[in-house]
Image (cartoon, one colour):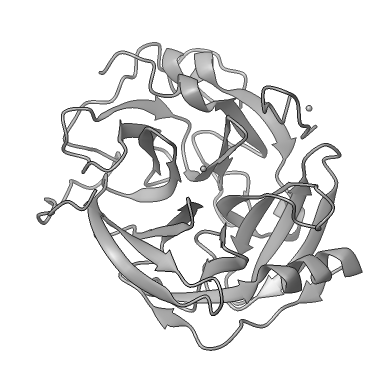
Length: 315
């Protein structure tokens, strides 16, 4: 159940630097310039399939069921939303897609684990979701455009109950990449899966307009990003049979910085988000209708203490 405690735990039941073009990686297992810690890979785990390794299994636990799987939707993005209803309640947003259909968003409320939605939105892939300065951002009809929705409008749709539809607030804005995204400190972080880049955008609270401020080099095949006071944390994956990786690097640094290191995770990881000191991780492997035969079939969120993620030995 998603719940709130004094420590921020919600489950047992988020520098201007020049970059250079990253080299292409070989097909198959998602790779990086650094070797990821895979100690203990292949043993028994608390989730389906072989263990990703001792580091992952020692940090993460199973959390809430992922909504939308029974309807054939594929989970993609994860984002925390503080005070979503104006009454002090928080929730975790989950963005999803289905080929040939609109994207959609669900909400899982902290404290009750009540699921709100779905709300259908205009997004071909819904690769990420973030709430920044009263706006909800979700990729548009491609991975280079961003749609915005007034947070108050999405809240109203959730409160109405049942399946709802919400149109974007104005036209999509072109961005450097929109395969994954998160918000932190009033800034939108968004990047492209295929180009190893993440861009930061200042958000105009009145209009939702984005203004680019910085660019960072990211790991190959990034599916999600979480920003903390001290670190960038990336969720990377490629392929149904290959392990994913969790990369950590000092905040404000490119992924080739000396502080970068990584550990293996179960296959097909997606969005990652912080809520009150707990890191939540989403997987798309539970969408077995779209992706049969995954190495690890995971139908629940996984969680770990955010502060613990950088605490491991490099591979």
